[in-house]
Image (cartoon, rainbow, N blue to C red):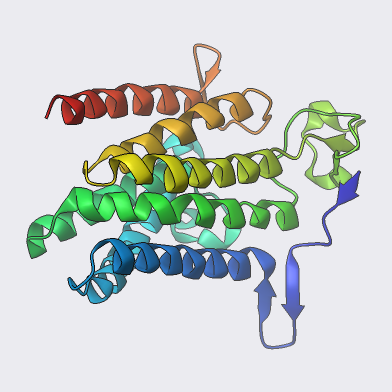
Length: 260
């Protein structure tokens, strides 16, 4: 059993620094290091670093906008009544699926505008994303969020009463689903880097669509024990529907790549 030390890393009279922000920043940097390392090894002489740095800015911006917009749309009833809350990211409310959609759209627009190969860079980012996500998920630990059903397992996460859903107020320890997803993301990286990259790197798009499928499969399993779904459709969390849709679309593209 373990508990979060709290969300605040540093607090002074002038500013407050949160662990979530620190972890996300480190996750972004680590992801970039992996991407550039692979690019330098696999595309020697092409000098892709400048494009990667520039693309990272737009992908990050698109990811943030997409993550927030996706969350706002799913909680439209609340934000229609509180429109000013829409831009207040400091109050929380982002979605990984929206982040991926926004990041992909921004990357595609950048690729078309600058005449670069979208799938080449999508594959590179597919290697950096899982590690960045694995580290970034620990921001949920410090915020005591993104947890699952109550559990008596030795690795149960203590959640303060003020942060527990009403129906679970009498429980103290919950499944640390942020940890499960972090471990799954590490597994995805290992599969992509040591298996799929080794055999299929020259087949552009295989790494990217494989990442989407692997992440979605794990997310479906983890989502089944989470208790913080913001919207259910036919009794199923919208995140699971998003994963199913992603798996189908990605599989279709992999088949097309295989035929080529």
